[in-house]
Length: 357
Image 1 (cartoon, helix red, strand yellow):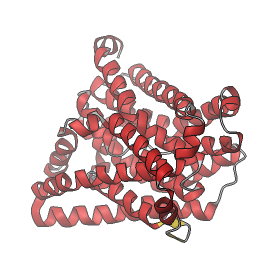
Image 2 (cartoon, one colour):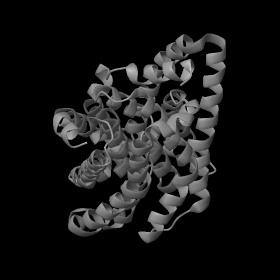
Image 3 (cartoon, rainbow, N blue to C red):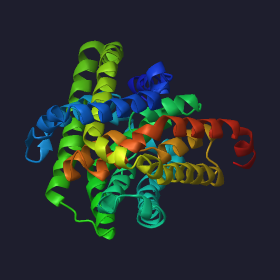
Image 4 (tube, helix red, strand yellow):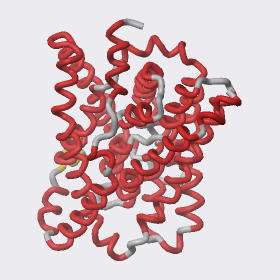
């Protein structure tokens, strides 16, 4: 491995979870309350923001999403792709879970729970939108927080870096076809032009821009300059996330007040798919004799969701006030506590894992 890739791997996974990320569920809950209250008492500003569109893209939200995504993509070193073969079994398991199991298992769970078991308790006109939101949520793996999960589980830094780089490369080409296929199987109309616009706006352009910026910073100031930039952008990225949530719940407030159980019901299939996919990845890695420091991040990456992309795409495809947007935001709400529980599981079962690997 080149010295630059080695440094990048260590830097990418070196950070532990900050106080903000540790209590992300609390901040999301506060944003839900603030958004609902502001949308109820001051609806006019939200209507104005909702009308600020060009080519079906809400401009304020597009800016906020870019502020969320760009700092995450700056961490990704596509130069690590040539190291994929070193951990080919762990990489293979993670790819199968991320792209061949997780999106389809989430679609199945959405059909079972949203259109079946929970249908009498949810607004009938939003059932398809909830299913669509859950599909979007599971259609791409996480890019940023997986570095934190890998560090907390003692994961191999080089594996995590190469896996994220490979997933982001696949995402450029696979996200739209997977979403289109599953929405079509769910009998939901697929607005292909809008879906492809979302891919270009929230995947292709941010990846290209982030990689250009990353290389420029590294040429001028090296890893130290990149680290300084990421630290400076981090609070801006988190603020953009919270502002997006306030906007979303400002539009969703009346619907939530009418049926407050909606969020809890939407969380059920999300929780099941996280534990199912992480458990399956963990067991497959054990079966194939993969080292625990690769299996642990593999399980976490396999269960992760790129919720920022899901939120952005749901807004473009279905609108601020749609059930799809609400379903993706529930993924944000449960992300930290559920993934921390997976970290605890893989750490506490290390002895059992290594006896059978």
